[in-house]
Length: 145
Image (cartoon, rainbow, N blue to C red; front, top):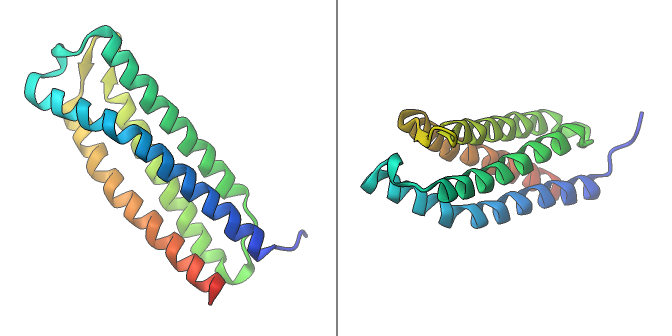
């Protein structure tokens, strides 16, 4: 059995959270523009190019979040925070799934958006990221404790 390295584990968690935050910062302006246009002009107002661009950006984010989920699943937490780690993995996995749900609400071929699914995914993501942040903060405070 491989022994856990608390500092290495903390560094891994920090890298996952930092990459998630950077991706969020990259996606957010596109997301806000998309949401605003959707609300004001409707799905039919998006050109093929614009819709492809937003789908590509969302897909890039979903891919990163799924990769980060796998990284977290493979992490070796110190035994005293194993339960907290499982909570973090679960919350992060749910976040990644809700981001994917938002992506699938956009039908690029038909140039249609399932507004209800999009909205539900957006609301869920806010709750998910809150749970991820809380789990991360608890783990870090226990590690630094």
